[in-house]
Image (cartoon, rainbow, N blue to C red; front, side, top):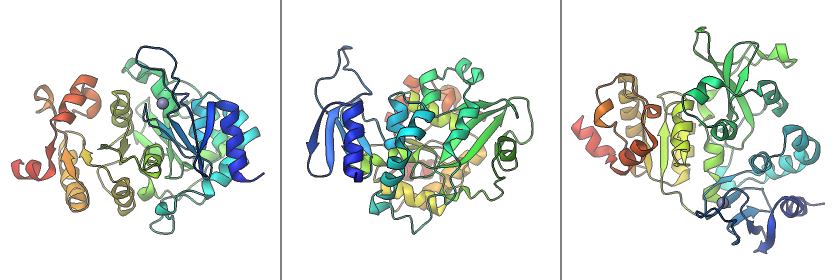
Length: 332
Ligand SMILES: [Zn+2]
């Protein structure tokens, strides 16, 4: 069975009202949203590529690859491994040529087995207390590592492969955030000494499929860390990525430029964040429409303020009144 037939059969199994749309896509009812009045969607707004499995809903803007589709509709990792791993692998090989992985390198050669995430399948309570919903934490595959007492954040490359696990200590171990290296042998996996984070732009693998369907994203918010990224996403701004620091690598820049969206820098409110905004701004100002999201008055002088200290309403307000990078730079 060719890849198109395999993906078509997955679509037929899990989606309603599947119909071909051109030679390479299908349309169907989106499984990820209901209408604003709570009634089920009757109009097919969900597009999926039969070539590479990327999908995008024109109504709710959800998007992703074959793997995130299958987890999104509720399949377990074991079910996916058992029934769909070969199809996912073939689909990945057909990812759009615009993302030619030859240069620069934005994918990993040695992905971590997905099954490792099963080990971390606990909901981190401190994040629930901070206001993150279970749905958000599940969406970002946040878990908990009982061996090292760290909240785990999977880091995926642009094609969705698992390239690293980052753990945030809940017992004040140093460093607070750690990209795992020597931890893996305790789960029967080889240690991973080489961590090249240059190609990692957190959540980019779910944002970029929109490009493939030529519906240009209106907004790309760029934040520093995991929590800020999930918080902005939970507020309803789905096109958000995290640099995992304040430094913009050439690889990250390449990915961001290819998203084709106006970029809203929203780094932390401390000195490294301001410096980072300036450095990222200089790198992106000639290639993107560039804005800076400022902190609301109540937090403006708070050096510890981060995007996740804003209410969802404040995030939208500040985003809507974001100023151009040029104005920000001139005022600073
Ligand atoms: Zn939808």
